[in-house]
Length: 193
Image 1 (cartoon, helix red, strand yellow):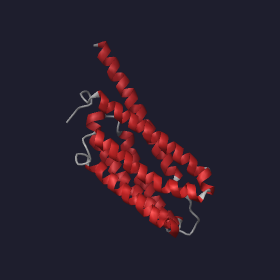
Image 2 (cartoon, rainbow, N blue to C red):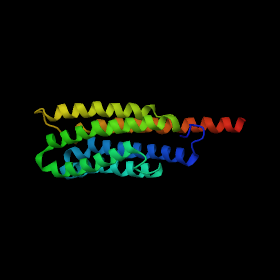
Image 3 (cartoon, rainbow, N blue to C red):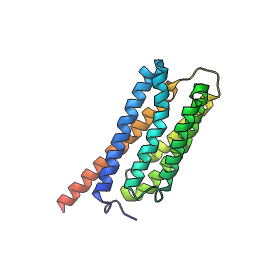
Image 4 (cartoon, rainbow, N blue to C red):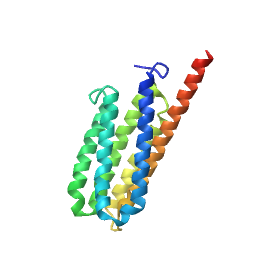
């Protein structure tokens, strides 16, 4: 297993880029969900299917850059669960937002667990994974909250999912910045030697 000091730079560069990309997409998704999509049901429907589909795609790409899905079991499971979730949400949209929120909540719990496991696995190779571990745990809590809200009678909308995406964006940004700082420190130590 690679240590933090011998992890190849392209791997670390990819991971940093991956986290910045995930941050950017999550920020845009949350901003649209808090604003325009609340009043535009067709846009909200597309966004609700797109979010887990995007998660599946980026987990697949990230796993491919790190040895493939077979070597990265937590990302493989996250990929499968995210694909199933996107399809289930598309099929459930006609049944209303409470049903969609139930599926989204269950997905948040599962994908959070898989993200936590991925962060733990990457800790030895890359360091700077504490935010991904916290994000995975927070995702599980957010999913439980969504599930409890979904069984209630109060109206729900895409805006009830937006905080989940916003917190995810925050954790991806923290992870990207942490890797950026740790890489800068490694480079400055290498130059000093």
